[in-house]
Length: 85
Image (cartoon, one colour):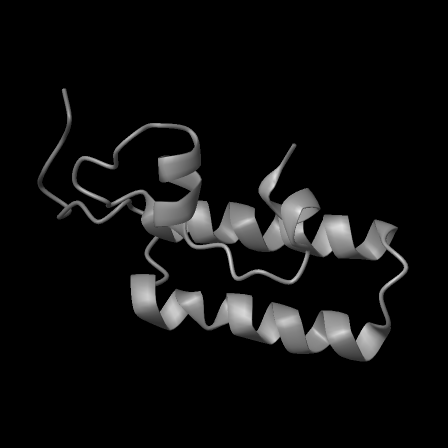
């Protein structure tokens, strides 16, 4: 059972996803991308549900607020000169 199926209005954050998967973020630089994925999955889930548009918009605004907490970088938090390989 997925997180949204347990409670469709819970606020899902990257740490909750990693904990559920029993994984850890190493540098957490991927969290902005994880937040974007959470937003897309949440939007898709609620679009398929019978929730009202007002409830969905209010919930997604809370989810989008994660962007300010985790940033909106697309480079996974690495400096321009740093490379993994």
